[in-house]
Image (cartoon, rainbow, N blue to C red; front, top):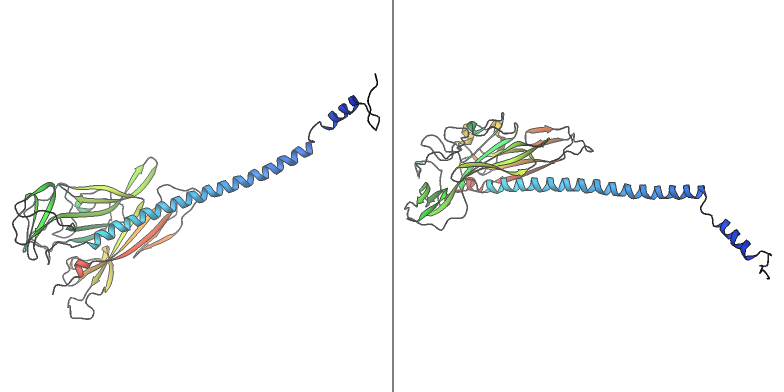
Length: 343
């Protein structure tokens, strides 16, 4: 049998053996080079992933701060804008023109002054706007014992802006207090028959209180903005997480003569710690605007971030050294009802 050979004189079997020898695989150097190239590529991809994850976490944290802070500013400014709104009634709310024989509601909270409960008394100026800075956890004559020290308390009394579809003789539903009035007089009453006042409308009566407390969630402490709200009782509930401090400065107009060029202009913004009984009572001045400061704090710590910033909330300088992110918000609210003149 004749065996075929190639031009070099090799048989088929010899060429097959030679091919198997040359196809034996990569050398050790080639393997290491491939591994190094793969590790470099993997490290680059991992670095991009970690960077994107960190950026996403930071963006999410700041987004949460923005949302909480803006919501808190919105709630407080909206309430202040409606401060001292009494429907059709014009003038000061006191028992010489306003009738009220109601007892204090369950859960009553009394602020500073001799006439600063939910309903007006026969003695002293009835304070529809009042605030203080918490110097202890016990505030408002002890009705709350969980306030964050250094944060402000705000107390407002007014009626809800939209009148109810009730007239004299109708039965007001249970669960709220009401104010029926015309321009000259009014009655604060609870559920039941609507008093008969000529040319009157009926509004829901409201007493709001705001302050900050701290809540423990596992091993973490979360500051929250609390709201007290009058229904059939005066009850409190957390409304916004992550609000570390609220602060108010009250814009006072010292000019009481409407013909004076300086009338209706803020002469000074005064913190609650410097407000006097005379200023709260509008005796020789008027509170016509309020500056609102809100410091929002992240819910959770970020151990990769250190916050050593100083925040300025009006006259308060607040310095921190921890791992929480924060954003400071502020707004100035004109109290249109307090500054409105009657001609």
